[in-house]
Length: 224
Image 1 (cartoon, rainbow, N blue to C red):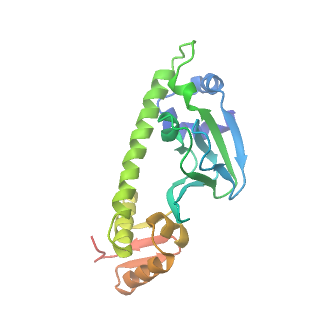
Image 2 (spheres, rainbow, N blue to C red):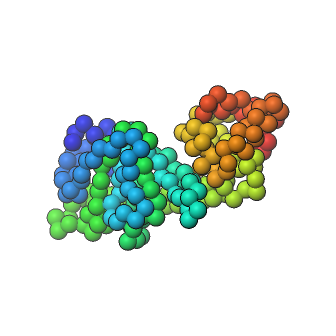
Protein backbone atom coordinates (compact mmCIF):
# COMPACT_ATOMS: atom_id res chain seq x y z
CA UNK A 1 0.00 0.00 0.00
CA UNK A 2 2.94 2.35 0.66
CA UNK A 3 3.62 2.60 -3.08
CA UNK A 4 0.44 4.69 -3.37
CA UNK A 5 1.35 7.18 -0.63
CA UNK A 6 2.85 9.72 -3.07
CA UNK A 7 -0.47 9.83 -4.92
CA UNK A 8 -2.54 10.00 -1.73
CA UNK A 9 -0.50 12.96 -0.46
CA UNK A 10 -1.73 14.90 -3.52
CA UNK A 11 -5.35 13.83 -2.99
CA UNK A 12 -7.54 16.53 -1.43
CA UNK A 13 -9.28 13.93 0.75
CA UNK A 14 -6.04 13.50 2.69
CA UNK A 15 -5.10 17.17 3.14
CA UNK A 16 -3.37 17.81 6.49
CA UNK A 17 -3.16 14.08 7.24
CA UNK A 18 0.26 12.98 8.47
CA UNK A 19 1.96 10.02 6.81
CA UNK A 20 2.02 8.23 10.16
CA UNK A 21 -1.77 7.95 10.08
CA UNK A 22 -2.11 6.68 6.52
CA UNK A 23 -1.57 2.93 7.17
CA UNK A 24 -4.04 2.78 10.07
CA UNK A 25 -6.48 5.03 8.19
CA UNK A 26 -6.50 2.85 5.07
CA UNK A 27 -6.92 -0.22 7.26
CA UNK A 28 -9.80 1.40 9.17
CA UNK A 29 -11.53 2.31 5.89
CA UNK A 30 -11.06 -1.19 4.48
CA UNK A 31 -9.92 0.22 1.13
CA UNK A 32 -9.94 -1.96 -1.98
CA UNK A 33 -7.62 -1.48 -4.96
CA UNK A 34 -9.08 -2.37 -8.36
CA UNK A 35 -7.57 -2.34 -11.85
CA UNK A 36 -9.45 -1.47 -15.03
CA UNK A 37 -8.51 -1.74 -18.68
CA UNK A 38 -9.00 1.06 -21.20
CA UNK A 39 -12.71 1.61 -22.01
CA UNK A 40 -13.81 -0.56 -19.08
CA UNK A 41 -16.57 0.75 -16.81
CA UNK A 42 -15.48 1.59 -13.28
CA UNK A 43 -19.06 2.47 -12.37
CA UNK A 44 -22.03 2.07 -14.69
CA UNK A 45 -25.26 4.03 -14.51
CA UNK A 46 -27.44 2.16 -12.04
CA UNK A 47 -24.53 0.90 -9.90
CA UNK A 48 -25.02 1.27 -6.12
CA UNK A 49 -23.97 4.74 -4.94
CA UNK A 50 -21.90 3.48 -2.03
CA UNK A 51 -18.25 4.12 -2.82
CA UNK A 52 -15.98 7.01 -3.62
CA UNK A 53 -13.04 6.29 -5.85
CA UNK A 54 -9.54 7.75 -6.01
CA UNK A 55 -7.52 7.52 -9.23
CA UNK A 56 -4.15 6.01 -8.32
CA UNK A 57 -2.87 5.76 -11.89
CA UNK A 58 -4.27 6.22 -15.36
CA UNK A 59 -7.28 8.39 -16.29
CA UNK A 60 -11.05 8.15 -16.46
CA UNK A 61 -14.06 10.21 -17.49
CA UNK A 62 -17.48 10.83 -16.01
CA UNK A 63 -20.02 10.44 -18.81
CA UNK A 64 -23.74 11.13 -18.95
CA UNK A 65 -25.91 9.61 -21.67
CA UNK A 66 -29.41 11.02 -22.03
CA UNK A 67 -32.64 9.28 -23.06
CA UNK A 68 -31.84 9.78 -26.76
CA UNK A 69 -28.32 8.41 -26.47
CA UNK A 70 -26.53 11.77 -26.58
CA UNK A 71 -23.18 11.55 -24.82
CA UNK A 72 -21.84 14.32 -22.58
CA UNK A 73 -18.50 14.32 -20.75
CA UNK A 74 -19.01 15.72 -17.28
CA UNK A 75 -15.39 15.64 -16.13
CA UNK A 76 -11.96 14.19 -16.79
CA UNK A 77 -10.32 12.34 -13.89
CA UNK A 78 -6.55 12.15 -13.43
CA UNK A 79 -4.20 10.72 -10.82
CA UNK A 80 -5.13 11.64 -7.19
CA UNK A 81 -8.59 12.91 -8.15
CA UNK A 82 -11.79 11.72 -6.44
CA UNK A 83 -15.12 10.69 -7.93
CA UNK A 84 -18.46 9.30 -6.77
CA UNK A 85 -18.39 11.07 -3.41
CA UNK A 86 -21.37 13.35 -4.06
CA UNK A 87 -23.69 10.49 -5.02
CA UNK A 88 -22.60 8.39 -2.03
CA UNK A 89 -22.84 11.26 0.46
CA UNK A 90 -26.31 12.14 -0.87
CA UNK A 91 -27.25 8.50 -0.19
CA UNK A 92 -28.65 7.99 -3.66
CA UNK A 93 -29.55 4.40 -4.34
CA UNK A 94 -27.74 4.31 -7.68
CA UNK A 95 -25.24 6.34 -9.69
CA UNK A 96 -26.83 8.35 -12.55
CA UNK A 97 -23.70 8.44 -14.75
CA UNK A 98 -21.03 6.16 -16.22
CA UNK A 99 -17.40 6.40 -15.12
CA UNK A 100 -15.12 4.90 -17.76
CA UNK A 101 -11.37 4.25 -17.73
CA UNK A 102 -9.79 6.02 -20.72
CA UNK A 103 -6.55 4.08 -20.26
CA UNK A 104 -5.37 1.27 -17.99
CA UNK A 105 -6.28 2.59 -14.57
CA UNK A 106 -5.93 1.75 -10.87
CA UNK A 107 -8.63 2.89 -8.47
CA UNK A 108 -8.83 2.93 -4.68
CA UNK A 109 -12.40 2.32 -3.51
CA UNK A 110 -13.64 3.54 -0.10
CA UNK A 111 -17.05 2.91 1.40
CA UNK A 112 -18.25 6.44 2.22
CA UNK A 113 -20.00 5.21 5.38
CA UNK A 114 -16.57 4.26 6.76
CA UNK A 115 -15.74 7.98 6.59
CA UNK A 116 -19.02 9.62 7.55
CA UNK A 117 -19.76 7.18 10.37
CA UNK A 118 -16.57 7.04 12.49
CA UNK A 119 -15.62 3.73 14.05
CA UNK A 120 -15.69 2.93 17.75
CA UNK A 121 -11.93 3.53 17.97
CA UNK A 122 -12.42 7.32 17.65
CA UNK A 123 -9.43 7.58 15.31
CA UNK A 124 -7.73 10.98 15.48
CA UNK A 125 -7.79 11.52 11.74
CA UNK A 126 -11.56 11.15 11.28
CA UNK A 127 -12.56 14.76 11.96
CA UNK A 128 -10.01 16.02 9.44
CA UNK A 129 -11.13 13.51 6.83
CA UNK A 130 -14.79 14.50 7.25
CA UNK A 131 -13.82 18.18 6.90
CA UNK A 132 -11.82 17.35 3.77
CA UNK A 133 -14.73 15.38 2.30
CA UNK A 134 -17.13 18.30 2.80
CA UNK A 135 -14.59 20.59 1.10
CA UNK A 136 -14.25 18.19 -1.84
CA UNK A 137 -18.03 18.04 -2.35
CA UNK A 138 -18.31 21.84 -2.16
CA UNK A 139 -15.47 22.34 -4.63
CA UNK A 140 -17.02 19.85 -7.08
CA UNK A 141 -20.29 21.78 -6.81
CA UNK A 142 -18.49 24.96 -7.91
CA UNK A 143 -16.86 23.15 -10.85
CA UNK A 144 -20.22 21.72 -11.88
CA UNK A 145 -21.76 25.19 -11.95
CA UNK A 146 -18.84 26.44 -14.06
CA UNK A 147 -19.66 23.75 -16.62
CA UNK A 148 -23.32 24.78 -16.60
CA UNK A 149 -22.27 28.38 -17.27
CA UNK A 150 -20.30 27.19 -20.31
CA UNK A 151 -22.84 24.76 -21.77
CA UNK A 152 -25.75 27.17 -21.25
CA UNK A 153 -24.29 29.61 -23.79
CA UNK A 154 -26.45 30.11 -26.87
CA UNK A 155 -24.32 28.53 -29.57
CA UNK A 156 -21.18 26.49 -30.28
CA UNK A 157 -18.94 29.55 -30.72
CA UNK A 158 -19.96 31.07 -27.40
CA UNK A 159 -19.53 27.75 -25.60
CA UNK A 160 -16.06 27.26 -27.09
CA UNK A 161 -14.95 30.80 -26.23
CA UNK A 162 -16.26 30.50 -22.66
CA UNK A 163 -14.46 27.17 -22.22
CA UNK A 164 -11.13 28.39 -23.60
CA UNK A 165 -11.27 31.54 -21.47
CA UNK A 166 -11.93 29.41 -18.38
CA UNK A 167 -9.00 27.12 -19.19
CA UNK A 168 -6.67 30.07 -19.79
CA UNK A 169 -7.63 31.53 -16.43
CA UNK A 170 -7.10 28.22 -14.64
CA UNK A 171 -3.70 27.71 -16.30
CA UNK A 172 -2.71 31.37 -15.73
CA UNK A 173 -1.54 31.37 -19.34
CA UNK A 174 -2.85 32.06 -22.83
CA UNK A 175 -1.17 28.81 -23.92
CA UNK A 176 -2.49 25.54 -22.47
CA UNK A 177 -3.38 21.92 -23.17
CA UNK A 178 -6.90 20.62 -22.53
CA UNK A 179 -7.58 17.00 -21.43
CA UNK A 180 -9.85 16.23 -24.40
CA UNK A 181 -9.42 15.33 -28.05
CA UNK A 182 -11.74 17.01 -30.57
CA UNK A 183 -14.63 14.55 -30.16
CA UNK A 184 -14.33 14.57 -26.38
CA UNK A 185 -14.30 18.36 -26.33
CA UNK A 186 -17.47 18.37 -28.41
CA UNK A 187 -19.04 15.94 -25.93
CA UNK A 188 -17.96 18.11 -23.01
CA UNK A 189 -19.43 21.25 -24.61
CA UNK A 190 -22.52 19.29 -25.69
CA UNK A 191 -22.19 20.30 -29.35
CA UNK A 192 -21.65 18.55 -32.68
CA UNK A 193 -18.03 17.81 -33.55
CA UNK A 194 -18.42 19.24 -37.06
CA UNK A 195 -19.77 22.52 -35.66
CA UNK A 196 -16.96 22.70 -33.13
CA UNK A 197 -14.31 22.16 -35.82
CA UNK A 198 -15.96 24.88 -37.93
CA UNK A 199 -15.80 27.41 -35.09
CA UNK A 200 -12.19 26.55 -34.26
CA UNK A 201 -11.35 27.05 -37.93
CA UNK A 202 -13.08 30.45 -37.96
CA UNK A 203 -11.15 31.64 -34.89
CA UNK A 204 -7.89 30.53 -36.49
CA UNK A 205 -8.67 32.37 -39.72
CA UNK A 206 -9.54 35.46 -37.68
CA UNK A 207 -6.01 35.32 -36.27
CA UNK A 208 -7.09 35.12 -32.63
CA UNK A 209 -6.43 31.44 -31.96
CA UNK A 210 -3.73 28.88 -32.62
CA UNK A 211 -4.21 25.18 -31.92
CA UNK A 212 -2.43 21.90 -32.49
CA UNK A 213 -4.51 18.87 -31.51
CA UNK A 214 -5.55 19.59 -27.90
CA UNK A 215 -3.10 22.46 -27.33
CA UNK A 216 -4.51 25.98 -27.68
CA UNK A 217 -3.00 29.44 -27.67
CA UNK A 218 -5.17 32.55 -27.36
CA UNK A 219 -3.80 35.49 -29.34
CA UNK A 220 -4.41 39.22 -29.08
CA UNK A 221 -7.96 40.03 -30.04
CA UNK A 222 -9.42 36.75 -28.76
CA UNK A 223 -13.08 37.41 -27.88
CA UNK A 224 -13.88 38.09 -24.23
